[in-house]
Each structure stands twice: as structure tokens, then as C-alpha cells.
Length: 248
Length: 350
Ligand SMILES: Cc1cc2nc3c(=O)[nH]c(=O)nc-3n(C[C@H](O)[C@H](O)[C@H](O)COP(=O)(O)OP(=O)(O)OC[C@H]3O[C@@H](n4cnc5c(N)ncnc54)[C@H](O)[C@@H]3O)c2cc1C
Ligand code: SF4
Ligand code: SF4
Ligand code: SF4
Image 1 (tube, rainbow over the protein chains, first blue to last red):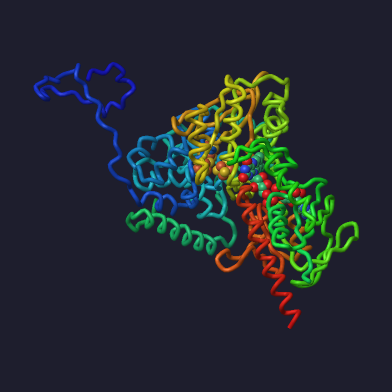
Image 2 (cartoon, each protein chain N blue to C red; image 1 turned 120 degrees about the horizontal axis):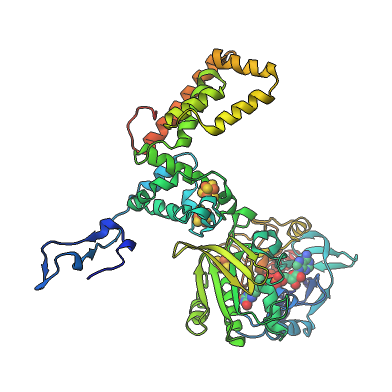
């Protein structure tokens, strides 16, 4: 069958044959392009449980597909392909292949929680989006998202010193996400800070950049936090059937 | 001689209990807090009922007359029970005006309260006059005035009915399905299409629960005979463009946002627990279930019983119920009350 609206079909589903005869009819070449069937051939039955095992995904089984999360969603308003309801459906049924088609937009959730307040079943779709992005990352389908890189640097410093030091968080975040250090907005911010801040505070800021003081008696806390983080990461990986080493 | 049975609430459940008891030769006292009997279908002016298609004022009106004209039933309207003492076979109820009623057993048939749509402000009720409830549409139909936009009296071109308003919603602590609103909405949609053939009616649903025989007579008939359209979407918000209402949401079947103009939006409101239930619970010493309705003991082992011996319950007081089921439960409670009276009578005689 010749098709003219090829742009509407996923390219991988379009097939032409250089040399094919069916029932005595020559169907070779461009004018006999075929569309491959799009039937679902299996369900990944572990998928819902895996997402549910990650923080935020716990209530995914409650969803009854009403669409309130999607129609409340900030990101959906600018990009119709961002559709939490639809993804929750795919995950619940284990349609992994379909979900992976959208892997590069799922992480774009801005955590505004409008969906959380609209959902009649208390699914907490925002948490499910977070868990799904996490799942994609752990399974190696997506690289770490910028927000994950930021969170990791933030957490790393807290665990190490009990404090955060903004200049380091920012520089490391830029490095981690491959962004240049000189950014217009950042320069403007620093210039304004220097102009408006009392000298005393500026000196303290400067000192902490150089000496990076630790919270007193932090060692014990660090130990406990590290242990906890390790435990959670271990559990997450185990739930996903991944190897034992830490996530980072 | 046994004492009379006290029936609280004069809706379909209370009326059927009174009629059943009187028919069996048992005296009863029917206490109703409103000025008239009939319960929600009469007080709120419902139109044609599901599933009989009879007008509420005829069908339920007939039940009212039957009870009012029965010498075995003493009717007290505008009355409420203030306190309730004693044991099965020997209760004394004191009314708000101080009158006392002796009773051998009691049936609570105190029904439900309509959900107040202002509690879902995103759906426009209270903001736009053309956003109404199923109760208002019932009244437009039963008054004979017909379905018109309240803002300017025009005939609506397009009507949207939103299901599950005030039901099945954890956000507002209402986890129950109100059972009848799907069917009532299909019924209303057919009534609108019949009286206004040029008006298109759309029903926005999450699930359709036209259970049992209602499936053919309402869900199928509304589509096959009346061309009512069903759209799978829970609406995000109802706004206005100054002229018409705008209904926004996601049509989940085509995975596309929708923003559709309507002349009238109807909320299919649910059945809340009676607002009096806390008071009833403390006056009569009966437990409420976790949703706030009056708790009924296991159906398999008990007949219409509450946790208090001699106090029975029937109808929408126990949870969302249809009229037909409320009537059946009223009759069951009557049977239970008779049993209790005879048991008390026997022990007293021994
Ligand atoms: C919009 C709408 C349409 C409906 N249409 C249909 C339909 O077509 N078919 C159908 O089967 N069902 C219908 N229903 C459901 C129907 O209304 C109920 O099934 C029915 O009213 C339940 O009867 P009831 O006697 O248990 O309670 P109610 O009808 O609520 O009656 C309770 C009575 O008790 C009185 N009362 C309450 N508290 C006290 C108190 N403290 N002291 C004294 N008296 C008290 C009330 O004033 C009332 O008269 C509809 C419901 C709604 C919301
Ligand atoms: S939290 Fe995420 S999914 Fe939820 S409404 Fe906001 S952007 Fe959309
Ligand atoms: S709002 Fe809740 S129940 Fe509705 S589709 Fe979204 S997650 Fe599912
Ligand atoms: S009967 Fe229908 S409209 Fe009413 S609460 Fe149940 S599903 Fe919703």
C-alpha cells in the first residue's frame, strides 16, 4: 500500500522491500512501503513493583486513569507529550518499550505538585515522576539529569562537612553538567552581592570559601548519614534487580 | 400490648418501614424533622425516578399518602429527638419540644445530605450561574419550566454533565461511590434530549456505573436512542470566556487536552452522610462507620441491626442507596423491629 503521510508514522515502522512478490504481485520499492504492526507483545510484570519500590512511587497502583494529573500539569501545558497519566498507565501494565520512547522528557517534571493536589486517589504523581526518572537512570536508560547532579553535589557537601558552600556547589554543578563557569546571570549576581552586602558578611563569605569550615562534632552524624544513604541506595538497586555496588 | 415502634426520618426508607409495620398491625410513630414527608425525592423536588420513570411526586407522594392515612401511624413533622433512654422493649424518646414518646424499638431512616458543590471550587459552582447540580436540573424538569440557563433563561445548545462530583475523591475525604448518580445523569441526559432535541448532552466520566438492569435502560438507551455522548475525562476546571462556559481537561482516550465551550455544566452530586449523623450517633448511642454513615452489623448474621439492641437502621442512612433498596431495607427493618418487640414482650411475660 503506498502511503503519503509518512511523517505521521514512526520511521522504524516503515518498511520497503527491494525485491518482494506477494501472491504474484510485485510489491518492491518505494511505492509499496509497508507500515509495521504496533501490537504490544508482552508485559514487563516487574515494572510497577520496581517503580513502587523507589521513593515517591509507592502509590502508583492506586491510579485509575482519570487524567487529573495531566490536565493540572505545568509541563503538560507547554508540551502535550509530557503526560503523567499516560506514563503511569504504561508502567502499571509494564509497557516498557512505550515508556522508553519518552525517556528524554520524563525527567522534565518541575515538582510543582499541582498533580498531587488534583489527584482523587492520592497517587502522588509528582513522586511517581521522580521515581520513574530515578528508575530510568538506575537502569542506565538516561544519563543523570541536571537536577540529580545538583542534588548529588549538594548532598556530598552536607555529608562531608555538615554545611554547604554555594560557590563550590555551583562550580561543581557547572562542571558536572558541562556548562561554562562564566554565566551572565551569575556574574550579575556576584556584582550585586558585592555592591549591597555589608563588608563584614563579605569577609565571612570569603573566609568560608577558602577554609571551608565543618560543623562541630560532625563526624558521628556523617557516619550515620552515610550508612543510611548506603542502605537506601542498596535497597533501591536490589528492588530493581541490579548489582550490589553503590549507586554513585 | 407492645409499645409502638419509633421511626426517625420520613423518606422512602422510613415510609416503607411505617407502611410495613402498620400492615402487620403494629402501631408506630414517624418523626420527621422537616415540615413534609417524602425525604430527598420530595424535599428536593426530583423529576422522573430511576428506574420506574414515574414522577417523584406521584410515586413517593403515593407512599406518603398511604402512611398519612393509616390510623396505625402517628406522624410528627417538624420534630427531632433530643434524648433517647431505656432498653430494647422499653425506650423513651424526648422530643426537642419536650414531648415524650414511648417506644419498644426504633428504626433510624435518617437518610443522607446532598454534597455541597462549593467544596470543589475549580468546577465553577457558585462562581458561574450556569453551573448547576443534578438537583437543580431535577427541579427544572419537575417544575415544568424546562431546562434553561439560569443566567439569562436561554435554551442551552450544549450541556456537560460532570460525574462523581463529591464522590470518589480522597482530596475531600469522600472515598465512596454514590451509586445512583451515573444512572440519574443518564436519565437526566435523556430527559434533556427528549424535551430539547437540538441540545447536545455530553457526560464526562471516569467509570460508568449503571449497574444491573440500568445498563440497558440508561447507559445503552442514552447512547442508542438519545445520542448522548460519553467522554472519558475528569475535568480540570470550568471557567468562562465571558459568554459561555469553558470546560477544560484531558480527553484520556485520545491523549489530548480539551477546552470546550458549553452553555450549561451540571454537577452530578453525591450522597454525603447526613450532617446530623454525629448528633444522631450520640443521642441514639449508635456507632458510625469510617465514612460517617450509621454502622450496620453484618448482613449475614443480623437483620438491619445497629450496635444498640432494639435500634435498627435502613436506607441511605447506612451509605449511598437507591430508592428501591432503601424501601427494601425499610421493610427489613420493620421485620427486625417486630421480632425485637415480640422477644421483649415474651421476656416481660415470663
Ligand atoms: C440528584 C439525585 C437524584 C436521585 N434520583 C434517584 C432516582 O431517580 N432513583 C433512585 O432510586 N434513587 C435516586 N436518588 C437516591 C435517593 O435520593 C435515595 O435513595 C433516597 O432518598 C434514600 O431514601 P432514605 O429514606 O433512606 O433517605 P432520605 O430520602 O434522605 O430521607 C431521610 C429523611 O429523614 C429526615 N431526617 C434526617 N435527619 C433527621 C433527624 N435528625 N430527625 C428527623 N428526621 C430526619 C429527612 O428530613 C428526610 O425526610 C437520587 C439522589 C440524588 C442525589
Ligand atoms: S509535579 Fe511534575 S507531573 Fe506534577 S504537575 Fe508539576 S510538573 Fe506536572
Ligand atoms: S490524577 Fe491520580 S488517579 Fe488520576 S490519572 Fe493522575 S495519578 Fe491517576
Ligand atoms: S454512581 Fe457514577 S457518578 Fe456516582 S459516584 Fe459512582 S461512578 Fe461517580
